[in-house]
Length: 267
Image (cartoon, rainbow, N blue to C red; front, top):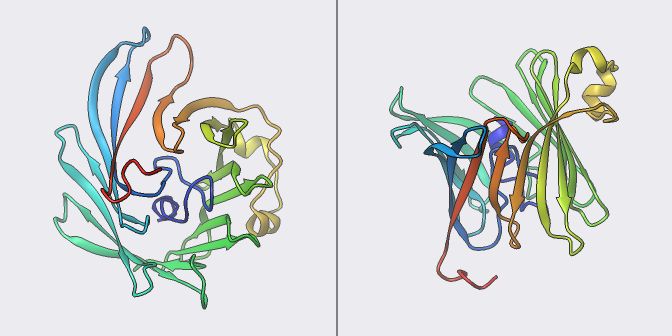
């Protein structure tokens, strides 16, 4: 639920945060396609596959996300329906198994708000969202009907409102993934680093109430660098390397962009 939602919470590096497999979005982007390249230990390409694509409304909000199999067939798709104010109203998804669209998350907004504070699906699984005074997302929490948390994300920003740290806690043991965003001297986003913190459950002792309320820890533990993501001057992902270690097989993700004609080449 929330992994998909963070794709359209705002414009990356300016007003919002993107999850692991989503795209930074700049003005005029119509669609983005993702291609995987599997590399051997020598860096040679073993095989290439299209894995995902995203389309956007003209106002920059996510329209749909599609996932593909090795035969380039859509296996799963997500579509986001807008309300009369051009805000996300609800999500619907399609799978190759049921061959039909199913309504999923419904999003709720406070009066005059542009970002939702609550989402709920048909099984009464809830999503809660918190923002700072600048309207930037600081916490998103996925909660089962019984009140237990199955995913929590927290975000930290610099003085310019750019996300610099993201933490994701997943599963019953709240395993931790940490993300760092790197900017060049001109303020352009250039890189994202992904760290897996080993032994999260054993090494982090937390007060459950404080954890639920604040969702934050001091990241002083050594993490394992797992992925580098690189960006162009527009703030668009151009390449991502997983298993970023010398001498081991890697996965390279490459991205291709299409633009609405009215704005193509104007930014």
